[in-house]
Each structure stands twice: as structure tokens, then as C-alpha cells.
Amino acid sequence: MTADNIAMTEETDKPVLSFWDMTVEQRDALAQEAVDKAKERMHRNGVAFVEVIDGKNYLRHPDGSITPSQ
Image 1 (cartoon, rainbow, N blue to C red):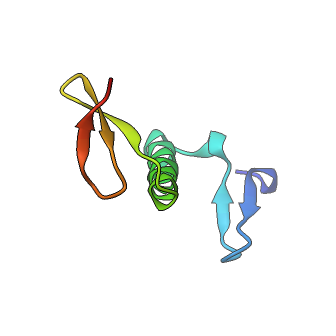
Image 2 (cartoon, rainbow, N blue to C red):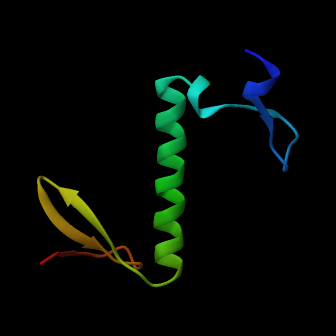
């Protein structure tokens, strides 16, 4: 790995791998973290999001309830 492939985070000053140097598992974890943050932000703003359960679409509301999506 070269210095060009390493970035420093502003919060911790720890080196961070380039996306292209990450393993599949690291990329998956990064993607899941982004999804979790987006879901949290949507609920914080009162917006429901779509979940697929057994091949059917449902709305997950900020209060945690689930309703069928149409």
C-alpha cells in the first residue's frame, strides 16, 4: 500500500483505507453503516422507509410499526 492509498480521518487522525483497497467484508460493513445512518435520519425526520419482508414491501414507520406498502 502506498501513501496515496491512505487518508486520515478528521475525527481520529487514524489512517483509512481507500475504498478500492478494502476487502469485500469491509465494503459491506461500510455500506451497512451508511444504510443504518440513512434509516436513522429518515426516522428522526418522521419519514417511513420501505422494507422487503418475504418478497413483499412494507413501510417501517418512525414509531417502529410496519404497514403494507401499496
